Image 1 (cartoon, rainbow, N blue to C red):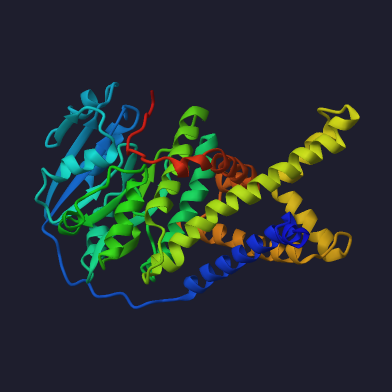
Image 2 (image 1 turned 135 degrees about the vertical axis):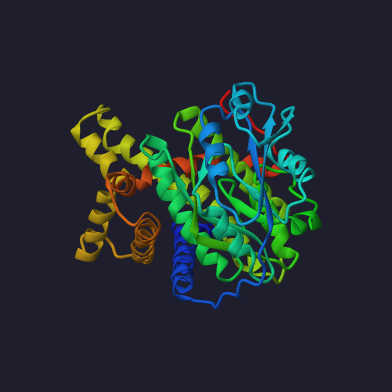
Length: 423
């Protein structure tokens, strides 16, 4: 019994998780240098329907529709906006645009809204653009080209954050660039399982084959991609197509979005994680599972270390706020702490344990991927990149905390694709 407890000690668990994380990071570098030959563009499409699902999007709907109307496409372009039970001015503002078909429904949820619009379309391609996003003028052209390759049934693009000059979106922009890099890497081996809402395009016949979007779970963009891949299709990625999304910038809106992401991921794992021969079952879905487990375990241990350190070194001495307290949290929440810790390990003043060395290696390999994503998609580094990059840790801690809080969601029987927004 004692040996079993020793086996499951926090040190052994940390060592295992850190080692797996290092292996995963190394796999990203392998994918980075793989250059698979893409199939030639074998088909050109003559029609596309852009579906804009919108629930209380009065702040962004005009800029979204302007971008969709201005987007170029070599063929017939149809635009359908689904006003999903909005209680604000979404419908009024959208009605100003000529040539856009508007479907009004009660609040059914995003997946049901997409299916409703899909039933009104006969176009060869179906594009999804969230009501809080704007697409570049040439985005549809590049996406259609990607869909024209053999056996490609869906494709996604580079996603950026438009309102990144605000607090939460500043961090989200770095995250979106990193996620775009990951999708581009995974697409090389048909392992990308996310076609995000800011802009994704599908072959209509492929969507009909899998009976459209599932209304179960918050992550319809992941669910539909998994089902397409399991049908034998490929999911493409276009580095030339760009969409910019607006991230919630107040605490309430951001928390709602992140809790939806966490709950949606758990639902995806519950319904789709299985032993199979496809690459997503051997690599991507286990990777998603590991990311959640890592967040819960390492997040809990990290929060414990921060709180216990604060209690032991300061509160126990009657000190609640001082310059040393600020220094303590600054080092925890910024790159300074990691740099100091790495230096102390290499200098021999801190123990060079297995966990310490693997942790240093995995972290040192992680950060360059963020820099690479920034340079690859933004072509520059400015202050709005540097600030969140330097203080990335508190953002991770916040996401980890949300993952911990909503772990019981895994045991919920059903999860319907509907949520509140801007209410």
